[in-house]
Length: 173
Image (tube, rainbow, N blue to C red; front, side, top):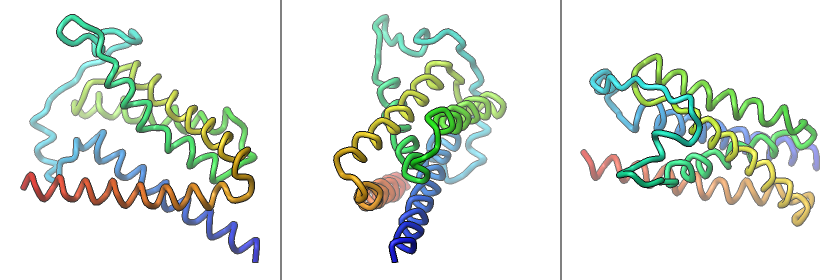
């Protein structure tokens, strides 16, 4: 019975990770547009390879809100990867986080649908690392129930985010 429960928990976590990545891709690459043709009108292609420069300066002052948001948005990614395989090494968890973030930045540049920024890559990766650390701390506190409890919290959070996004779409139609 315990093996079935672990497999069930892993399937729930994998499902939540897939929903998370789909929503992230829709927000980051498709800018929450339902009509993809509108993305062609953006024609925004820029690249910043200097960390914490350019995009942080708003009206002559440093604005850390975008960096904080990038960190926060990638925390679940690190947590989900840790939930899927507790024994995976730290580097093997960080690599997919870094790779997905890099993919988002490269695709934004290639399709001219956003600014590619090294600061985003660093913030996103840091967020994933924080998620890995968060899972480690939760595991120490909650023990064997960690994945089950985090799956419940993640499911509630996922439903809330999806409902809010649907409401946002409906209100803006």
